[in-house]
Amino acid sequence: MKKLIVSMLAGTMSLAAAHAWAADKVTLQLKWVTQSQFAGYYVAKEKGFYEAEGLDVDIKPGGPDIAPEQVIAGGGADVIVDWMGGALAARDKGVMLVNIAQPYKKAGMELVCPKDGPIKTEADFKGHTLGVWFFGNEYPFYAWMNKLGYSTEGGKDGVTVLKQSFDVQPLIQKQADCISVMTYNEYWQLIDAGYKPEDLIVFNYSAMGNDLLEDGLYALEDKLKDPTFQDKMVRFVRASMKGWKYAVDNNDEAAGIVMDNGGQDDNHQKRMMSEVAKLIDNADGKLIPAAYERTAKALLDQKIISKEPHGAYTTEITDKAIK
Image 1 (cartoon, helix red, strand yellow):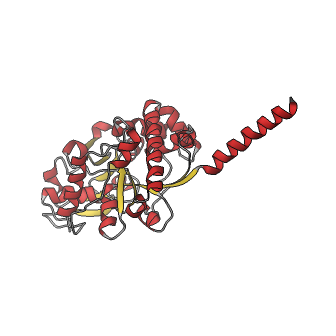
Image 2: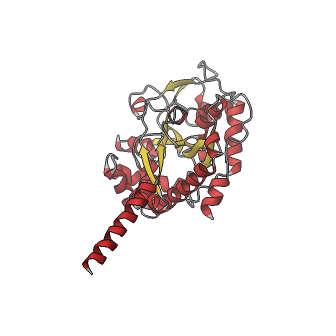
């Protein structure tokens, strides 16, 4: 009997080892550092959603010196989180990125100005300094200025663009009249710095209809032609969106998982998660074609991309993942 039990246990352990050995490896490159902006992926890993899909996922944080488009082009990732402006610009230059899922349905980008400053409306932008981040984050801002007909070369009839640091110091130190913030991040840094909501004038890109797609999942076109890789991405997206659904429904727990993986400031992560949840919507990961068309047109109008992109997104992955 003992031999039978030992044999069964050994068989179970061998089976478990075989499953672990057989798990398909996926490397995900994030756009920024570990924070609740990416909670869905950390939750999917922590809760075993990836493992249940037969995946061994390595989540690589980003940072100011990391361009996801360059990482995947160099073979350092299978899939990346990127803003569509950056992805389409990279595709235009030969890095054939394809949007395979769009967890973020709404944009979190805003421009904020002190209420006691010179800017009250869009008409007041002329002749003033506006801050925005670069590395692909500037495209929505430039699209907006282009839509308003403002030069970004300075002068009394245009705006001066400050290449903004990834914090709120340019506003605090009065280097700019307005700065860019995310609803889930830098906006709250301003509040923590002593500003009150009533002290700020907020231009929200989504509310103005100027939003371009943020935080989508992208893979390389040639790899997606491989049915094995495509199947792996279907499983990855399905597990990721399950992670996002859990994170949206369990904000504080999700923020705690982010903290366990290197996030900073528990209260900030909880607040961020509650704001991010507003951008995810129903967590199906499906791209809205009209939002894609708006994003592509904005980049074409600014001549950031030289030609209309074709094949820059696919619904095949999310369609299969949902089924």
